[in-house]
Image 1 (cartoon, rainbow, N blue to C red):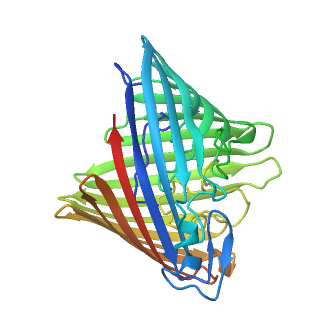
Image 2 (image 1 turned 45 degrees about the vertical axis):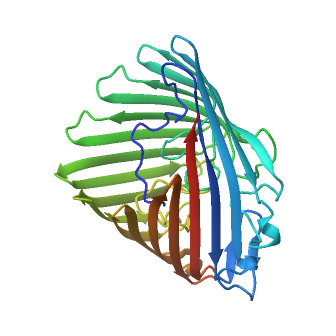
Length: 387
């Protein structure tokens, strides 16, 4: 979703240390969305209505948010990081919309989304506390007006040449209701142990190996990925993920991607296939349900990794006089013959900067055998700042 690329130094919090003085930065956002689908799921409820035209209050959702991040070095190699996010409807639910982007029960909320200590010793960095993560199965999703975060103990080591080793114990995550200063953090059972290696030892290739162990349960997952530049501007990517439990409810999915990026034009085509057994998915362990699969849909998450799903995705991007344009198609069929598991989605986006405002308009068409059929229009306005 959102045409973003997988970060290859996964699990490094974006709140990691910046040497020197304290820094303060953040952004202010206003997001709006509307749909003519008969049924649509908002942050507060699932809506079904006969009056479901575009720009109608009953089929629209909106939010305003402000995020503020603070970072200060307190000793050599040790940094304190803190961040807060506040959301509000600004009274929109009484006039233009009936739902919100994130669940805050229509009340103005402020919560602590980052609170950690980053310590660096030699080529090892530790991030201890609430943080943003970027690993294949536990990551911060940036598409929403408020980003999900994790309580975790993360260690990153670079002693091996061209290789990053990661170990993390992830104990809590949000992405549900942001109800208090604690950000609605929910326990992840006895925690998730994540171990990863990201290496560039193979020429022109970045390879990843990740293992996740959901403590206190039989849930274990493996993620393998390799991305190579095979020629100037031409890239090839492969992904394989497997979920394993003792009861034999194993699941797996394989994906491939071919991309071209040169002269201001980007093109890609991707394919994925999930086996038709098992129920273990490959979406985010904590967050809003997105995945890192090459074929993931732009807006309708979850279809591509269901058992039996076969997905093709193609996309293009270009820049025209400062206007960034993207197009993406995702088509999901399913061998399980479950009509509700099939979906086609077409998304067009246009992004530009108007003064200090980053503005994006998205047009989404969804076709499926469920009531999510329809058109969606979304507008994103973001003003980044630093103090």
